[in-house]
Image (cartoon, helix red, strand yellow):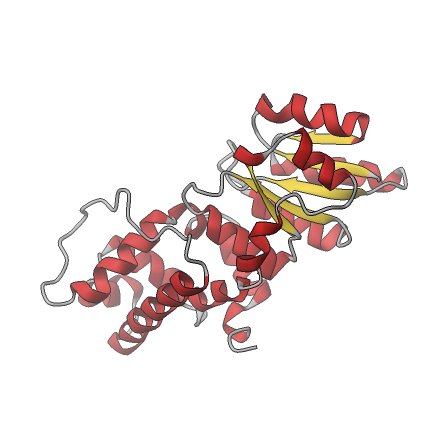
Length: 254
């Protein structure tokens, strides 16, 4: 096999990956390094066969999305392994988006990383085939962005806790798109729960910026909780540009 990329901002896994992949390993600690290292490999006539990509990095300017964008453009034949603590906030949505929008190959939970799982990759085997069942349902992530304006509405909905009046005023949008978003986003969450039962939809800390409007809690609460549970995904700095490129609103129903 050729070279292997590990995008991981901690040293904890360095020894494990070096033990398996030896001098074929390129360990990058931030997404900015990936482009520089990839360019050097290309000039040397080499490429990455596999790329292990973490999502949340210590540099707040980037997430693993930045590396996925580079690989899709510059090294499309590289097999992508989403390498993350899958149970942490936003990771499941990141993994689904990585498959749907960047053709990721598989997922490897950091807790399952070992000599045995990495050696499977070294011989071309999926180290965690149990994830393929719900990765096959990755298109459900598109439903979270049924309209081009929905990322902004997700953010406004969470900030103003579903208050239609406040959302309309802050977002300079009419009431009909807000009501349509509330109903559509709730439906998207229910579909996610059905297709990916392990997804976390329970809030850990939704804050209390303003009270819910009495009588509307059935829609307000689930959306606010879902947003805050997956806030790392919704607030990824690369997400707006990715959505403009992949246009998930055009992928629904394909």
